[in-house]
Amino acid sequence: MTLKIVIDTDSATAPYEQLRAQISRQARSGALPVGYKLPTVRGLAEQLGLAANTVAKAYRALEGDGVIETRGRHGTFVAAAGEAADRRAATAAQTYAEQVQRLGLSREDATAAVEDALRAAYGK
Image (cartoon, rainbow, N blue to C red; front, side, top):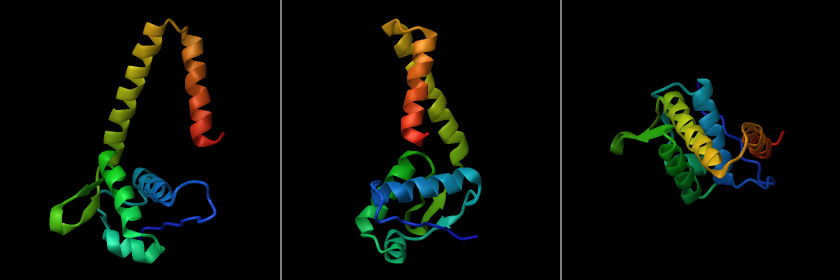
């Protein structure tokens, strides 16, 4: 198994975000298993024709999301992201539910706001 990344230079989405999203998706789907060693920042930048800072920014975001973990000089590896992502999503949902209740929104209005946000985020 190998890391499969395609950067669309014509896309309105920033290259680091394309990279972050693709690695995250592959890790969550199991295409990149837990423990898979990712290329170095410099190595991946060279492969993709990107600046090292672009790859480093994506790796930092992925690490912050719990998708990857850096083990010092040993490298960067896919973490057990599914559980961390599920926990963060549940926490965000709980926070949202508490806020909309305090704001006095009905359940229907709160749900509609979430649906609108999801459509905007996922493009559907």
